[in-house]
Image: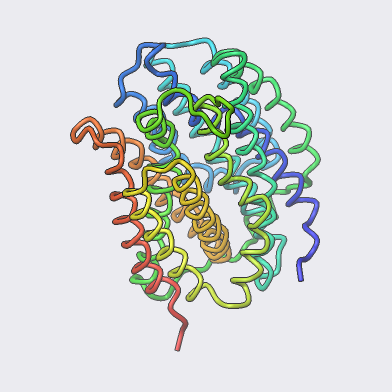
Length: 387
């Protein structure tokens, strides 16, 4: 039975959702628009991963500063700067300027995520943590849905710059929700500071985070638009209707967040009962199989179905593995998300770099299958029940 989410969960998740609009629109639109602003394919990969690279440092900065400064103030400042950065994406085309903006967004996101997730973890009983983290993920990813789906639709109607500028203004509405969230510094630093007794299990947890980040947020999110463009062109005819490929890309990418919004609490509640030692390896295995099938399927409906199944696996994994990491404390969580960010940072560069070398977009699915295989074996070790 689902429990009602707390005020802290709802308000921080809503603020997070609003902060994500511009970032997610960039994932949907830049792979379709990069040539118009004079970027090279490898530069697209760098831009879409730069925010993850900088978080390898800023995640730990966030962990340290939450013990020294008011968390509500840091959350408000991060949300404000993040919203303003969407205006930079809208009106500048210089690779260097965009790179700096993406790095600054990585800094903002480290604080937004760490403060919000640890606030939820600190106010939730351990037996319900998967479910509550599911609520947080589900609500916050409404921003991903709107950023990607609405971003794709608006791009086809009003263009790249106007879409991102509009999202930047809307993102400022996150600030009132952060102020009203009720977060206090004591909510964060009193969370239990545990570690795995076994270094092998701790390392395996980090490998799980790396593999999850490198495939979903990394490879697939950053390259799916280009794969669709390469396979089907700029428009497709579905049942007599001509639909722009940006709209289809936005709908497919947005399905990830729709599934997370609707399903994450249920995934978390289910695995709270069945055990993460069973659920996590099975999700990795199913995702691996889907990646292999996507490599050989050229049918648009088949591709769409496969992508949706893969996103369901990723949603379940993110919900329960992040809940487990947050349960172990602020320090463990910061290292887990750093491993995930490292994977997400490598993902776009690996995907776009592989395309420049091999000139075969489908090879990205093979890379995803290999990484999910590593994640599957790592999850067996990380979540093996104590004897």
